[in-house]
Image 1 (cartoon, rainbow, N blue to C red):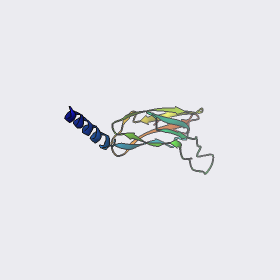
Image 2 (image 1 turned 180 degrees about the horizontal axis):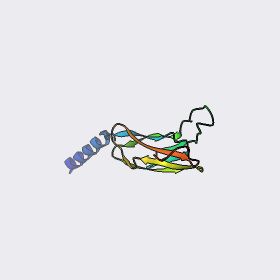
Image 3 (image 1 turned 90 degrees about the horizontal axis):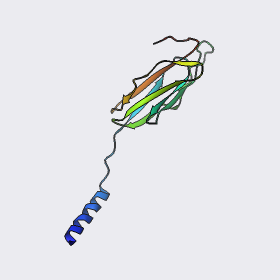
Image 4 (image 1 turned 90 degrees about the vertical axis):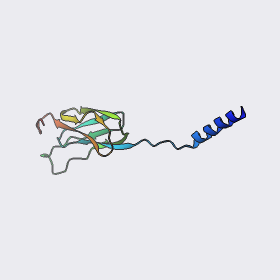
Length: 125
């Protein structure tokens, strides 16, 4: 019986110091194109929560503001990520999110969406 207990104790000790295999992750970026409208794109599972403010290129010489929030996140390779795009009041979704869903692969992963103001400053894509 002592031999069996020694073998079990040895196996448990080896298992406790064996390194866990690292899960491969890759970046996923959400791009909100310059449709001049405003809105938010979020991911499921959570990670992306990216908002674009509205911008009128004819109203001023200032460039379009950069999106705010989390527009790039890491996900485990093989994860399927789905997206929901929600326009702000006064805007609509012109196109996207595309692609939706995204299955994460090593390398570059992305989705994009275009929000347009309801006043029609951009056309259907």
